[in-house]
Length: 215
Ligand code: ADP
Ligand code: C5P
Ligand code: MG
Image 1 (tube, rainbow, N blue to C red):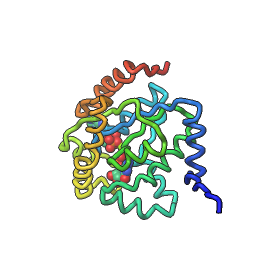
Image 2: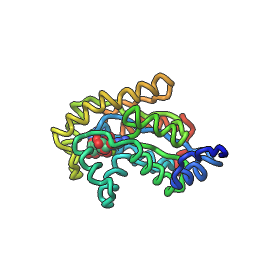
Image 3: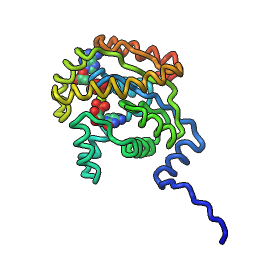
Image 4: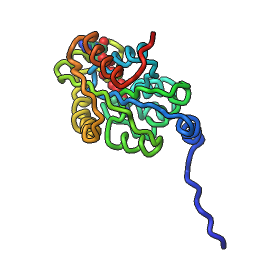
């Protein structure tokens, strides 16, 4: 009997992404990290307007997946309610699909990677390493205040879930920031300041990095 090599298991979706996104053009990814309520979404909206990135919030994509009635919906909903981190496989598929659909080659990936598993899996699957990591530094006291005032009808913006999310942030997400710090990739922002002041600091980072400001 002849020896038959097992073909690597690559789904069509993954194949499409690696061919069309990674095959011939360079993809720029900036990870936007920070505690819950540190202002990631708010500042990403400003960056998009000024620097032509596509903003992909992992949390927004997961919430859209729940709304779409997907078979993973209930599992995702339960994990978000508990402040737990959804398995990377699910989140990375959503990110890949959104990257492909955007037609852009510059992405702000907000709220991801949230733990070491997210980080390693994304790197393995997409072969993308981030240009840099924008880290929003803010006290829990300030973040708690913001989350309790957010008023977006989120299941997880209640004090019980907020405490769980802070714990997960310290135990699982900060080590990812430390990992990138050890690679010299972290640009830290004082996110406790008012929104326009935070954006001034964010703008300085993107400008010095060479991102063109939109006219
Ligand atoms: P994240 O995406 O990091 O969870 P958001 O951008 O959703 O945070 O911000 C959380 C809440 O705090 C929102 O209601 C937002 O309007 C508010 N917010 C964001 N940045 C600031 C800031 N610098 N100062 C005060 N409030 C802020
Ligand atoms: O970033 P955001 O606050 O929108 O995330 C809300 C929730 O979505 C997180 O607390 C977590 O339950 C889930 N999430 C996740 N994995 C990510 C990002 C978000 O499981 N990478
Ligand atoms: Mg957000």
